[in-house]
Length: 257
Image (tube, rainbow, N blue to C red):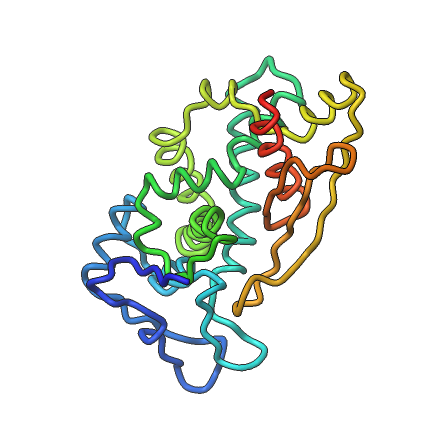
């Protein structure tokens, strides 16, 4: 495992978290000047509630604990940010493409909010330099996108809906999302491989298992794609659906479709 911090030279870690009194739900962060400058550059504005943004950058693999029932990580902010991102992206696509049907809008939204797209956006924004995590082979493809969603949740709680809407549309969409390019990008690999199997009389099946990743006990799904009884593709994901899509994508590459 490799520990990631916002800059190795600054050695920012969970040691910078200190409980305020004895209430596990109240805690303060001590951000340094370098961190404040970096987070402002990523966001495009100066945060007010710094602790929200620092919390948004702590992946579950690097969780700190105040008690057996409370962990310090970005999962709750990620949950909130995911819902907000879906809502704003949906409204933007609805207004952007007034002549397109529901199927097109759903596909486009899926392409924008999928893990690979969010990961690429997060890296281009420099979020990968701020995240605190233990990098593993199973979480490295999702943790930066997760952090981006958590930051969106933090912006909402700090600045409100209007500010987070501006951040998504005026920063993410303007500089990091190419809708024309995404419209040409394929993401439904599972449907494609199933269609190939039907046309070529191949029996396609998926198996999926959930297991805990290493010492951090993070749940991960592992899917295998079988053509008859032969394993042709394998994929990992935070959900069964994501794992199956990744297995189908690998199978498509191996088969040469």
